[in-house]
Length: 166
Image 1 (spheres, rainbow, N blue to C red):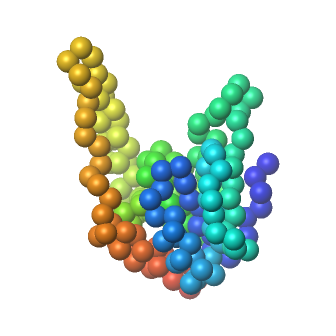
Image 2 (tube, one colour):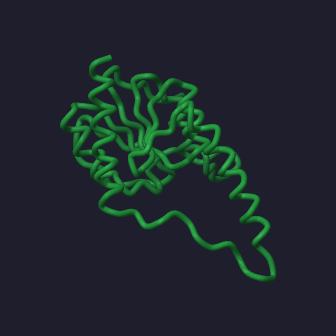
């Protein structure tokens, strides 16, 4: 059973590959928001009443790699901001009424999630077609830079101000 979420705005972090955890802690402190850092393995988090680490357990048949996603989706609500790059998790959280931001500050929303899912499926098909005797698919997202970090900070600040007014 998931731990009860606080009534004040909360930030749920899909932490395993999140490059902006330190920024989240700073913005959350300024806005007095709670943070749940959700992962499959322990992470160092600041000592704070508002920041809690949530390490999900293995499933009954061994490691359950989507356990962190399940915890986040089950705890997402209109008073939460979810930070993730996982498109399918973003869709689940949007359905729960949460605000969802990528690590670069770009929002996932009802208008963009459908095309993001379609693009993800196309890219998976392309990668599957490129694997084989001629090599593997390369590429990936561009390097995470200062502009991405700055855009994320601004976006998270705007979202928390909006939640505080609601």
